Image (cartoon, rainbow, N blue to C red; front, side, top):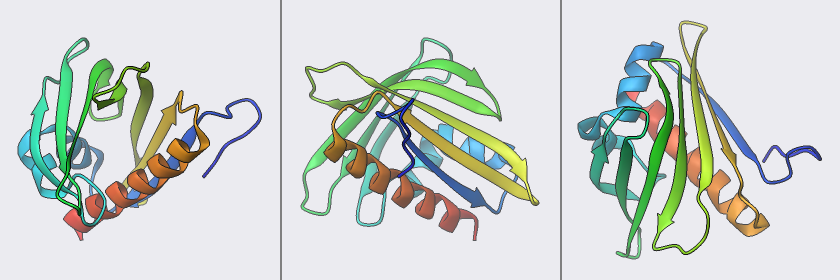
Length: 146
């Protein structure tokens, strides 16, 4: 996990994907594609809603290995296809404030460097969980294009 003194509540994860930014951006934002890869190994995305515009929202259902269902939702604050997304992040139900996720898709070495920056994650345990989840998501995304 990458943290520093100026951003102690931040998780940064990156991965090179063997596809052009527009294809990776589409996989990240189109519900039918999200259903095929979203989530780390053992987690299945069973429902995906995306209203891809500033002020629009998303909602994803993650079926966990134990059979439980976790809903993740957020509101888009920036949508710049195929380069960047920024949105809130809330695991439902929650009474806390949402965290913030920025995803960049940068053309690199014939593919795309995907960088996820997850901010406002106060709890160290949650940062570790998010890091593992994001690493797993990027692994599944990479497998989609292998």
